[in-house]
Amino acid sequence: HSSAIMTFHINDECLRTMDQELIEEQKLVCEEFGSAYLPVKETDVVAIALHTLNKEPIVGLRKVADDSNASWFIYGGELDGGEDFFEIITVKALEKEFPNALPYLALDTGYRFMIDSDDYEDVWKEGDEA
Image 1: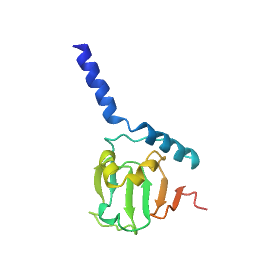
Image 2: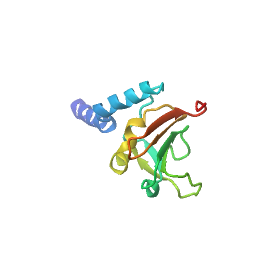
Image 3: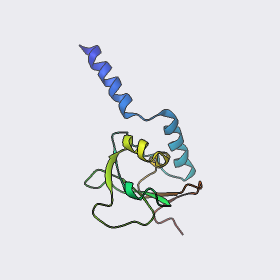
Image 4: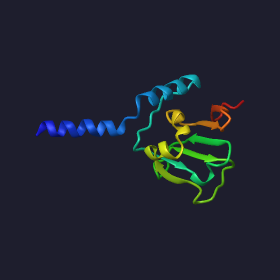
């Protein structure tokens, strides 16, 4: 019996851990911008405005998780306060929808990133803009 449980456990772990290369990239991003490393799992959720990802720049901000358990809010262009602005998807789904955001997902609460298709990148912590 125990070996079956063990195998399941190992597979379960595999499902939850991200690609090692991505983890390294996330750690580097955190180091570069002076952030604590706060990793996400593939099963974690993010709030993303999928219909805005054709606009620029793309902005992501990490808050304390809300009722939906999402701590990341990602959108393109201007933030619209509408109720249905964000959709909740898993980090795994984000890999397909918008992989460019993945390197930033381990940034600490309060951090934001801004990127565009011309390789522009800015990362800062709320309150540190000055």
